[in-house]
Structures are given as structure tokens and as C-alpha cells.
Length: 412
Image (cartoon, rainbow, N blue to C red; front, side, top):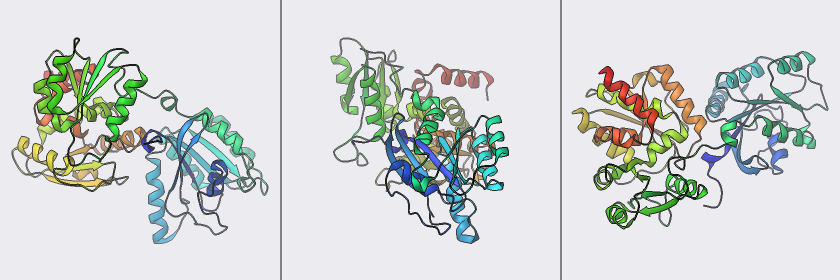
């Protein structure tokens, strides 16, 4: 892997009506013919993604969307694809023809505000019309950045780059740690990496690679072993490691081989914190005790891999939860950017670690679940809870342990 994964890139969504120059703007800023440009309205149908290095921001992912004013049955399908992009947008760009401002522009700004997405407004085609003074005044009042451009001539590109840098979220410029805050420099972390049928040939899976890089950047010492080698690795160390991290599927063996005085957790639980709100997902896992046979559960995966063998989301988690509950449960599955709208029908949502999507989308999904009154947790937390090692797996995270403590004290 030689480039930053999409999940680690700043997602910049480009929104607006049809034929306002969104694709021309993307082509101008990337200096490539990424999107097809035509005078015909509705040329862009599905979202078009373009990863690139946008200095000084670093790795970004531009997402060019279809116009939200598309019409007809097919147009509504395109609009739905566009609305999905809001869920993973870190920084929004609203493009409008300079002489037009109305319902659609206000709708897009409202979506940005509702999701607390920083925004930049681009008044395009200024060679034909000037933006309204009243609209400019409203944007300045709301402290929303705006620029003027003529994308077809490459004008306004430098100003847009500066506006994107100015409005980039702080948590992107100051990326949170995956686990290096738990393992100080010169201390050791042991990463337990089973090699099974689903491990990609010749390389490690993304969460493992990201964890190793995070530790190396922090000058921490990293040992990588398979589950059968953990006990011997611990015996060889003169000083115990600060943390043992395992693939969730090997939780029981790793818990048995790791002395109780050494903290232990899983990659998936680390990613519950890195990609979303860990304490909320801990509360979601506690809802497992309320499940009854026949309850419907949604399992959401952020990637679209082809499941094989003992797939964790389709075979192992259903098996462990069924054993825990003592009866058959109704499991439904979604993949990629699809996320079921009828969340109210589920008693629990179990999400993967989210390594293939960005933090914004995971937080958006947690918000959707909260609004629907449905608890949401993730793979690692679910496995730890159903196998009876939940408290042990939460030891590195004081705030999460406090949630568990309050739950136990309340007796709920």
C-alpha cells in the first residue's frame, strides 16, 4: 500500500444544482478531467470520487455529486445517492451559479449546519452574473466562507484551496491516535495477528497496518505475533508490554495467555474509539442483555468484501450472540455506504470497525441510531461482551469503564 487509504483522507463533498459547474470546478482544482463536463444538465449521475494530495492539507478525497434538483424517478435515485454523501463529508463545498440562490442552496446549507460540517460556498460563472449582495451579507453574518470563480477558465482555484485549508476540521489537521497514546515512546505493544482464510495474501489487513504505523510514528516498540506465539513472546520480554492488542476473533486465547496485570484490548475496539464514540458504542453493547430470541439485528460492514468460510460478521458473531441469548436471532446485513432507513425495526445495530470509511460517516450512523432509539455497537465490543471478557477489554479506556461501572451499579 503506497497511498493513504480513503478512510484516512479528508472527504470534501461538492454539492449544488445541475449544471452549475461542480464538475468543472473539480477538474480545475485537480488539474485532471476527473468528471465529464457538458452543457447538458445532469451529466454527473453517480458520485465521482477523486483521491489526491492537496497541499498543504495532505491526502483528500473529492466527491463530485449529482445535482440535487434532478427530476423524475431516475433523478430521485440520483438524489438519494447524493444525500448519502452528506453522511461522510468532512468539508462541504456548495457550488451555485453566481446569479442563482434559492431553495436548493438553502437546503444544502441546512444539511451542512445540521451535521456541523464546515462549508465553503463557491459562486461560479461570475463571468456571466455577479452574486447577490444580500446573499453575501447573509453568508458573512453566518461566518460562512465564500469565493467567486469561473471554473471553466480555471479562475478562483487558488482562492478555493485557501478556503478549504481555512475550514478544514481541527480533528483532521490533528489526527487522533489509534493506540500510541496508550503506549508511550520506548514502551512496547504486542499486536496479535491471526493469519486465517480472510487475511489478504502477502499483506496485513488495514487496521493492523494503521496500528503499526501509529506506534512507529510515536517511537513505540512494536512486536507482531500470531496467537500461538503470544505466550512465548511475553516470556522473552525483560519488561512487560504496556498493551496487548488482538484480532477480536482470538479474544479468548489471548485473554487466557495475557497476565491480568497487562492491559489487553482488540483492534476493533480501538477503532470504535478512533472512528466513532466509544462510550456510546459501549452502551450499545450493554443492550445485548435485553435481546430475546426472534429479535432483529442489523450487521453493517463498511467494505464490500466477499464473505468466505467463517466470516466474522455473517457466521461467528451470529453464532456467539445466538449462544449468549439462548435462541435464534434474525440477522440482516448491509455493506458499503448503504445503511438501512428502517432502523426502528432493529433491537441492535452491530457495525464493523469502520477501517474503510471515515470518522464522519461512523458518527453520522451513530446519530441516526440514536434518533431511531436503537443501540449501536461494533464487532469487537459485541464479541468481548458475548464471550464474557468485556471489562477486561475495556481496561485501557477509563471513560468506557466508567460507563460499565455506572450500568452495573444501576442494575439495568
